[in-house]
Image (cartoon, rainbow, N blue to C red; front, side, top):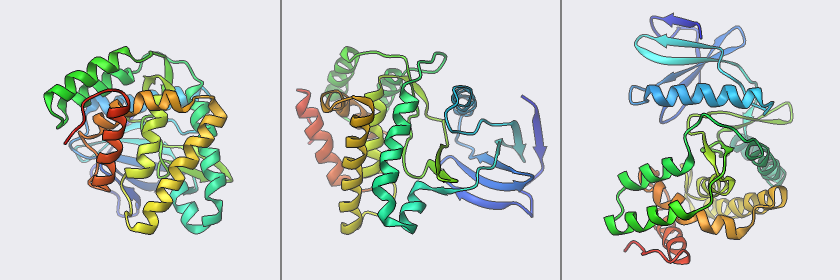
Amino acid sequence: MTQRMFDEVGSDWTLLGRGKSSQVFRIGGGEVIKIFHDAVSEEMIAREMAAAGMAASLRLPTAAPRIRATVGEKPALIYPEIIGLSVAAAIRRKPLSASRLLRDMASLLHAVHRQPVSGLRSVKSVLVTDIDYGPAPDAIKRAAIEYLHRLPDAGQLLHGDFHIDNILVSDGDLVILDWAKAATGAPAADAVRSEMLMRFGEGPADPVTTLWRDWAARCLSKAYHKASGVGEDALRQWRPVVALAWLRARPPVRTDAFHRYLNKALRSAGLPTIS
């Protein structure tokens, strides 16, 4: 892939968003540039390029990177600009649209999961690494990893970070962003992570918003089941290991509620709980 070089952030660039791994600027000419923070590995950038390109080739609604770039010494990717609002912003603007947008998200997630692919890391390997490097006691880690190895394998495309800030509403259609956490595996693992991101991911945690987030997670899971046929039993199988793996890097939001969720999932699988 061709590479463009910039000495610094352009004075005429417009900051569109800032996250834990990158900043995104509009640079004109129908393009945006995603500049990665220093801590982001080359492996993650390469995975985002490969997975986004793969998803675009499968005709999923997304944008593939056009060009590698550097800004100063920071790695970057240049994408075509997609005009729209995140699903989160669209719901804030029109709260009564939430049910429809969540149903559309569930259908889109199922469309991703229908794609058999190869060449990406497996979700099981991701979960093993995150559990192993996470803060849980060693006995729980060993039991959870042994349990994980017994779960069913699959080779479906998984997004890995499917939440309301990574999906745009553009001209009435949904478009998927940010494939840096993509993997292959069982769709239920990805659906469970989306459920957790909705309930316990970064964002407001006041009592009213918390009630809404729990409702939205149930709505998303119900719509995903209707679209995909993946049932509660399959989700229940994956919840303990997906939740335990998330301990490695999850934000400090709704910590007590998340630990109750985690321990309930561990108990349901016959695994030891965290005190």
